Image 1 (cartoon, rainbow, N blue to C red):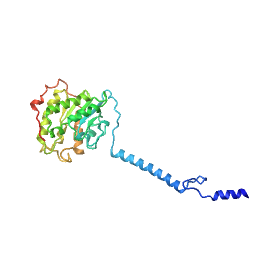
Image 2: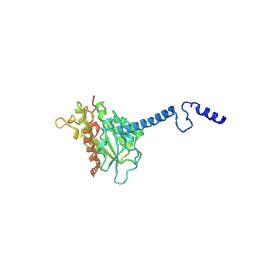
Image 3: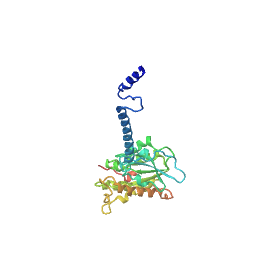
Image 4: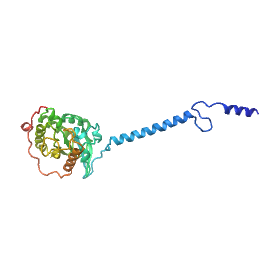
Length: 273
């Protein structure tokens, strides 16, 4: 009898909030806490998927290129980076030409580019952010748009380009023409006219990859649909530019000694913005 009274009293005692009743069933607060944990995990997983899909990344590992492989690094500005802060980690924006230059045996292997960068800034940054030695065998330089807009003389640009190439240390350097800039045609055309001779004098290759971006009736401007602002290529323009650069990368370099250097003093000029 006394034992039955003891059990009855124990069974009638109210359970404390958040504590199991001893029969394997959690109380209401416990169930709410468990549900909240599951919901938080689902939200975190969804956020990770969203970030992955909205900011696609190119794998960061950069093994040395094997025999016959073409691993290229870049030096550039917004035309290359397209807003990405992590070009060294091989991440570029959707309107970067780099996305269309890969494939067919050409692999992107990092480098440095930033929106608004000048050639001096590229050279300085590559002192710390150059790809590991031996990880690239080709450097693609698409630079100078911001320099000529700011009035940097060709002589200074020439020294910066040489520093960029030296800091990357790739045995092959491919220099590209810069795209047109609406309302800034004369300085752009003058720079593109000077650049091939300078590149040849360094033993580098030159490609007029921006040719397909120029309007057939007005070469100082972008063709229809190839730019969204008259300065940067649209995604369609990036495809034109990147495809031309890939063709240059995969082409067999011409044999023979480089042409005599063309002194920047003779053809360069200081351009006022």
